[in-house]
Image (cartoon, rainbow, N blue to C red; front, side, top):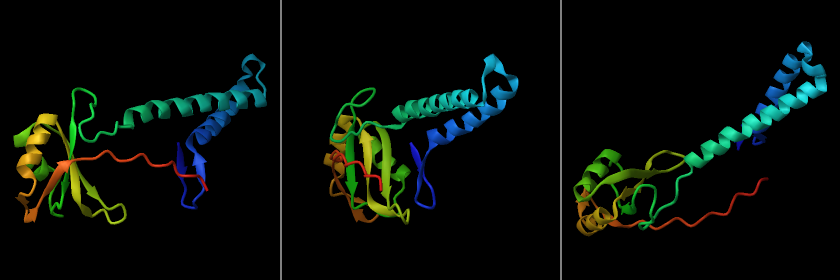
Length: 169
């Protein structure tokens, strides 16, 4: 994991934590003379602990944060879910209003209204994740229906193609 600094340079978070713990190790272990540790050994021990502590939490957190991509009904977690694409969505539509629109057709697991990264304004489409039977019923009932003054386009959400990893400059 790395963090982009305002200057555009990257610094590894683990390296920063390792260096900080290395300095702490130098300050703590050197004066105490634990086991005859000199300054270099104390610094090395601190760097090792820093690297270990810097990598493990992010590895565990990354596994929890990374959602499985679903589209068109791929199984995920507890039971199956389908992702429904909702297009031509009114810009004033909220997630709660969209959830209320889809709830009569089945259990709604999540609602996402897509926004522009730069302006944070809605882009006019979203995704509703729900149980497969409810998703099919919602698509049949809501496609072409008017919602907040716009005619909705509702169909199965397609899985996003995997992107190539960005190359570091």
